[in-house]
Length: 94
Image (cartoon, rainbow, N blue to C red; front, side, top):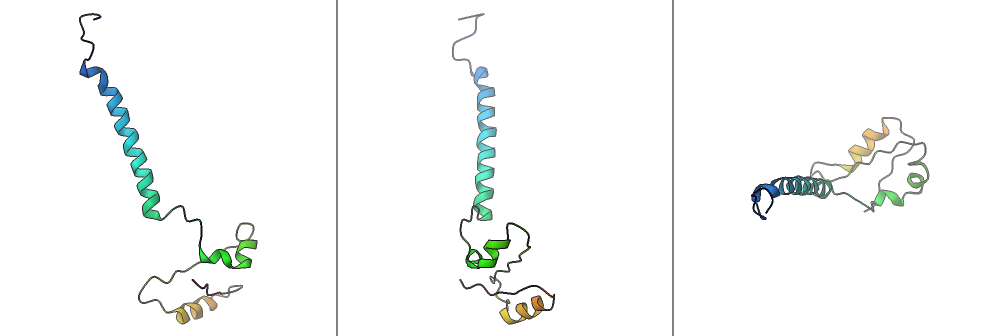
């Protein structure tokens, strides 16, 4: 005993528990964000297109539209995108 304080005084542990709680909350937030965003995504069918692999990381811009909406119509989408004067429009098989 130093200064009349007991060895297992609970106020000594408040800062440790507070910091542990903050660490746990931040780790949970990061892991939850990655899980809800679907990250990391190591594979996507668009990676099978040779021109995507050659140019996507260097000098080109690519737009990928996924058909998860029930009202999505591939032909209408392709016609609309072709009207925007792109270099190419591809339909990527799943």
